[in-house]
Image (cartoon, rainbow over all chains, first blue to last red; front, side, top):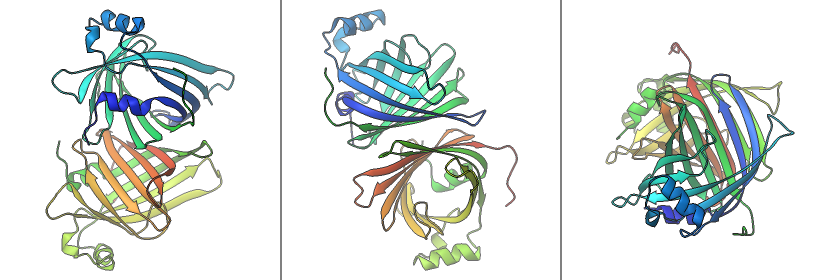
Length: 181
Length: 181
């Protein structure tokens, strides 16, 4: 199955009810997070899409299927605190290899700052994203178990890429209805 | 990277400290299980290996890298109860396609009875096992994030294979030392 970023983003659009389990490997600690994740398409002509491309030195003409993610999470680590956030993501496929490209983010996963990752699709259509950060790197794998179940495994690697500090697993079930764009 | 079942089993041999998170998708319930998993090689000449092949109508000459798994688990669902178990596993690679084959088990994952699954390796060396049971099917994906970190995602599918009932994620860190064979 060959999949490209356009098809993958199209499959991801919607509202997802997410369960995420974080494993701290050194301390064998579990974290449990329930959240609602909204993924909505953006136009390649949106000012913030063009701005994010330019701030990364990327020609905005190369942007494909940009999308906006918002989340609203409750963690068992702190019942009082609600984690909400949002992030603009802009895929930039390789011109010569449609299963690879870069993913620009207005805010990173492991650190709260803009980030650029490299993605590829496996032959099965699994999306694999590697994002280097200053103090660490993140490797994420996202795939669809069914049309309405998205699974995501994220590893936070040591900065040399040889060790894994934490690993987490999210199962995301599509909510009925659509998301306001 | 091409990997075969022999290399994969060799990488898996040892004692693993496992954290497993189960997600019940309908109820958004989390289960947390800590366990110790021992994986030890068995000889293709062992009587129980030959017996398991014969009971499945498989020529014992085709068995490759059989192994024995034992686990000792503590779940947060019942603090008093310790789940221990063991299972003999016998891979039977396809004669014409070394990245595919069958896996015979003396005891299944979703139901406590013998089971036969079909495995394949993806181009990345991820082991994918699909096992049909009477009331359900299990799809497991196992891969090595590093030499000493094995990750495992298991989905329990409805018997028609179209829905997922529960999904679970295990991170398994290799313990130092070796396991008595």
